[in-house]
Image (cartoon, rainbow, N blue to C red; front, side, top):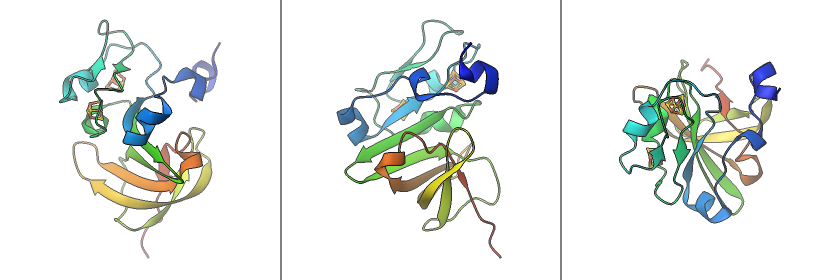
Length: 156
Ligand code: SF4
Ligand code: SF4
């Protein structure tokens, strides 16, 4: 039995990863690893970069077609999609954020890994208020494939 089946925590081996070059331009990383009847991500992509064999299959991103726009993040009920761009020493991660308060651009936050542990400081670069808000953070590139949530400090 895999760890995500026991504990609900995905591991990097469970996830389909782009090449280094594809990561440099920024692409959607889909961490949807359980076969469930769901497909809004497929319809949300303006570039037809996400496909599924059938409604119960896992979504597959064509990393060559993906432009990293993050539209798919907004519609995923599983909060399972992230757009990651890593080039040089810095990386950005676009992630779904359904809590309040929403962070502000320029605010320092804690980046959280898949286990819910704080891993590093990150700065909020952009906040997009859609169906599900999408927050873009910048952080050291070594954490690009680990940071999947943020902890935001409420303003005093
Ligand atoms: S990030 Fe944009 S282009 Fe890439 S799969 Fe999602 S919706 Fe499509
Ligand atoms: S919308 Fe999200 S949960 Fe549904 S298939 Fe796509 S990635 Fe998986």
